[in-house]
Length: 253
Image (cartoon, rainbow, N blue to C red; front, side):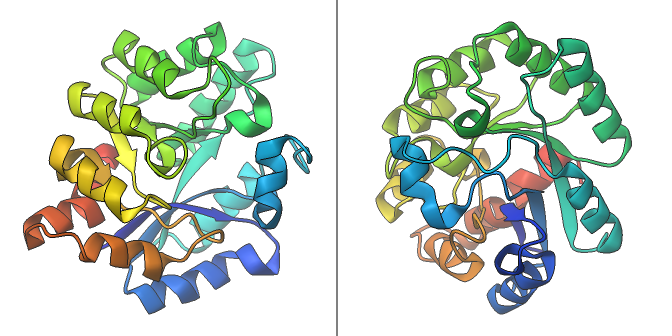
């Protein structure tokens, strides 16, 4: 079995669940973890990074994700994306309800919500994820509080919670994210959009047990992202860990 560990879907035709399933079939990928799309139009990504554009919405379409995982239960798992800029009790209640509804993890979006990993909301979410056995997946950005080192500090403060560096950190090669994952038991690397050099370094330093495959659909393609894993000079067993084993363990499958 092969699992795509990170794909965005929405009601837009270019990022629909059905469009993703076509690409999964072409890539010979069996299942996928999906998160809400639509808050950022990935076709304008450089504008968001430079601050020229603001998010289309700050409210994640979690209802659409729930509808999709119920419609295609044999294909999709869902990660719940919470807007942390709400009263803390409401944020925690949302995540607890999401877990009861079958969501398998938590997704944060610092580029949309300007959250700090060192703030109280992040810490309470981290503690709750540990209690509910939900992976804490997030992107990292360059501003203080939501960068690579900040997520490393949060992970060390909550050792019972599993944290994931989306895209293996920031930029084409985040050596700090790789080093932190290698030295921190509860920090993992999701591989989508990572460069081949970054992947080789991650295998050598952190190991395949700390890595899992993702596609970053629709910005990237499941075939392309999977091929980068298949071209690594590692054993078939280690490739299997990246393509399904690590994530299966994190999700309790």
